Length: 92
Image (tube, rainbow, N blue to C red; front, top):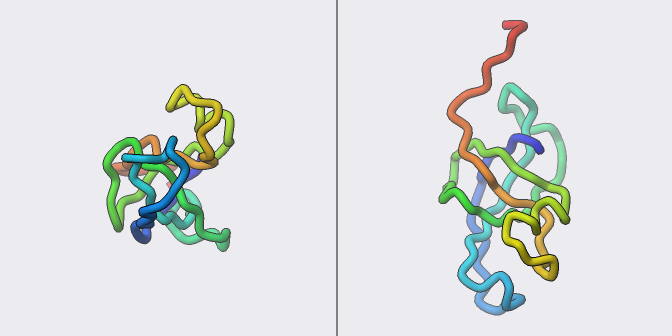
């Protein structure tokens, strides 16, 4: 799992049938303090109704992400599983 910021929507009218009705968001991975970590952006399926500007919790492993939907055929690599309210670090 990792933290990310939602930076946009992805609209696709033609896609794999297992993705029909699913919301796709563009995310940018962050460090624990919310700073971009330099990774490339990812497209993630949203199951928690996140939106632009939200800080989110993401599952990235393909098989773990597919288990959320119970469909091993689904072409998904990242799923947004939570909207983060805050991160409390013990060293601060």
